[in-house]
Image (cartoon, rainbow, N blue to C red; front, side, top):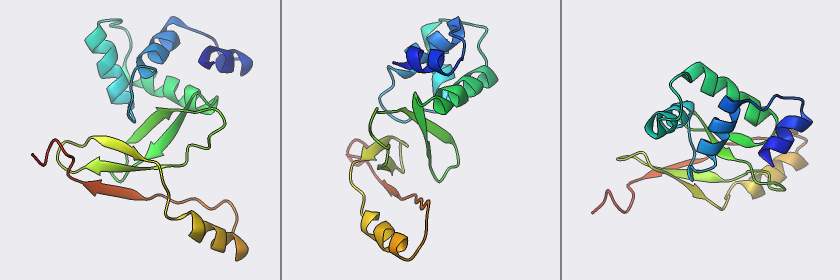
Length: 139
């Protein structure tokens, strides 16, 4: 699917892009450009890929709909694989100790957004972030 989206949008399929795709498809939680670069380094797949290359490729993958961006209070851009037919609307909880991030699959703000739409607001967006201490860290 990712290759198809890139081809459809007239982006080249490079070895670097394929390597980045291979890495991000294996990551199960939100990831940053640093996470992707570290995974490439750990796998010893390439020595010529730098942070800027990863960041630019993540931007292209976001642009064509392969991944979607999630912003957290630490202001570091993180991404997740986009799910076809899903608007990627969910929230996260972040462990204050180990910084593990988990998706929260409910939204308590959707009802309030409907009220705001009735008030005439359009293109409403919100960000809701939960923090806590995860099960492993609380032991």
